[in-house]
Length: 233
Length: 366
Image (cartoon, rainbow over all chains, first blue to last red; front, side, top):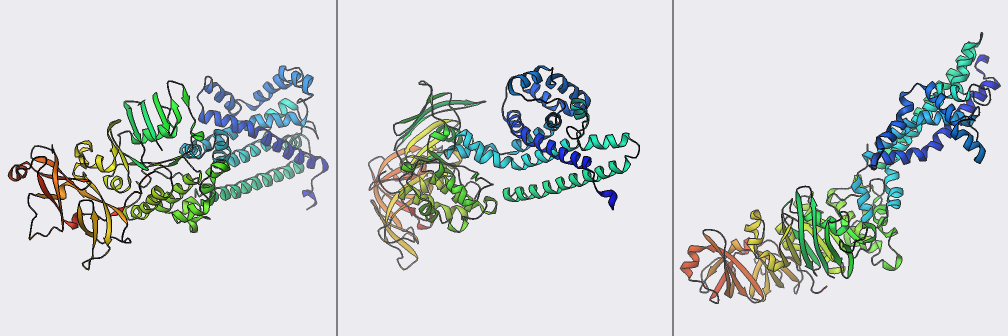
């Protein structure tokens, strides 16, 4: 069973992937909720454009998305240079860039799941909260948000899973640097490119499967608990 | 309390154009479905902003299109019991009840959870989720939730439309207690004459978005011509009664009105209780002399106050008896045979059997 033990580099890739995916999921969550709410509830000029932009990463080849990120968030890109000059935030060839690429790629999935759950909420319940004295912000916090919870959980799990598997945009944007931007898929890809890398690729594949299964089971349990709480079963 | 509404609002093809004022403890907005009752209630609650007009509760202007004033719903302090209860599914009954309290400043709270729970008999439900409640229980919790926000006005939009008669009969006593024991004015939407006759102190009759008639319940409900076509047969007097004897030995109760003695199917109340009975105009017979040898137990002496047309073959003759005005729906032929004219003495005859159970009369004042 020795062959199952992960090398230090492989462990790094696993840890990095989890870190990148977690950050990508958590940081994009508030934005995802906000945009899902806008798309579900508001009518405004440019709504279909916003909807299109959100969904673009789902349709574009990941390499194109990665290249667009490189153009905008790279060191010499308009947003990238601005962030570096004023905030000292650098994305290119850093794990943060990998998180950004994963977040962008997973964003449409997250928004779709959350948006669906918002559209399922009976707005009459919000009107009822208003008659009881809750202003719109409180109504959102005490009624809308808890009722959205199943959608938020589903969106987060989907986004996390997508981020774990993201390859094309990440490798295009931040390359494949061991210890910094080499996530699980990149590491597997690298193993397949070198002679004798089969065992490493297999080990990491097993790890990927295990993580995916864990995420699925966790989402099942969470979703069941939430829906039992909401009596939607 | 004064509720004053004068609004115009267009919703697609439908226009509500209604003005009324009420000081009643329980004002019923009565009309068939599509008459604009719910729109009007939603305007009072601030869930709909009217195109034009004013809404005022006591001296507080809630909405005034001329002054550009519109108080948002959450600042109106108006409790709303919805037709579909609308309990929050993710909260327990106790949390649902506490919801509005949260947003009520301590100084404005006039009810506490325990007294509301007792009043509505929902103490055993507190830990449950709304999905685990029956229809009647949901209604009571919804009433409690609205009440615990200490509202200045309660709106009830056919809160029991989805309940069967037995469940409704269970809940009405709670509404009566609300009306008589807590000093909150209630606006109650209904399309049922029986419900209105039982609960209302004042009635506003709506038809196609307009007010047909408004005023004290006994006066409005005795005018058949302002009620919707389908309900005209239900028109009649609301007689205020005082219980003298709960059981006269024949399973009937003896009561007094200002016009005389009544015998009704058994009433379960202590002597001296103030009650109200609905006497449908079609169930009243008239005689010019006190009849003898007749089975009808209620014979009330009075004088003809008014004669109104009620169709090709029928008229409604209103008999003033004590403080009550008892309309009788009779044929034109009988009118001629009896030779009834305004001012003439007459006797109104009512079979006890036709009287539905007497219900608690609204407390005076308020």
